[in-house]
Length: 231
Image 1 (cartoon, helix red, strand yellow):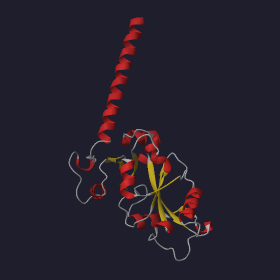
Image 2 (image 1 turned 60 degrees about the horizontal axis):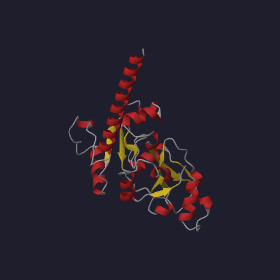
Image 3 (image 1 turned 30 degrees about the vertical axis):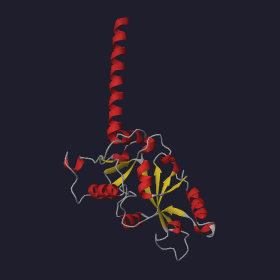
Image 4 (image 1 turned 90 degrees about the vertical axis):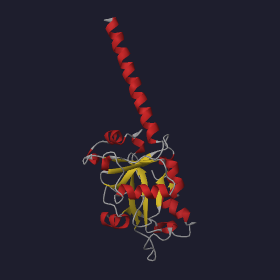
């Protein structure tokens, strides 16, 4: 019995070691050179007219080198976060994020678009799925950003209606991403995302079943979003 138990333990240790090796190799591939999902063409490059190709070109033009696309099942959003993490091969649930279009419902009558990033009618908020968005923090940030010259009551951020979000971004519900939007909406990234141990995060990829992951530091450098404690 003792020998059998020892053999079993040895096999388990070998299996755990193999899993660790595979996870390390996957992380190195993911955070290495430019990585584009082969899902649409089964090993070939994405078609030039696809959302993936368009966003890939935009990211490359901005200097984002380390990014990846993943196709996910149709029931992706019905699954718990832990399963989504596995489908994306993410290092942790904390890396799973979403882009939310929010509208300032109390903006003054002259604020009708996104031409002024400091006082925009709309903002896209990038936040972790596991986090709870704090709209009050965003209000306070915008108030300070405008040097307290605009009354705080003029900032009241609420979730934009789905049709408005679609019109502004060009992306449908559950496919929204802050990259390559139809409108140049100012982007606010939750500070927590920038403090993750892994310099990588995942969000929507422009289609419901397409997800985009990229190196956080490169994203921040390329797009210069506002970084705010949103949760």
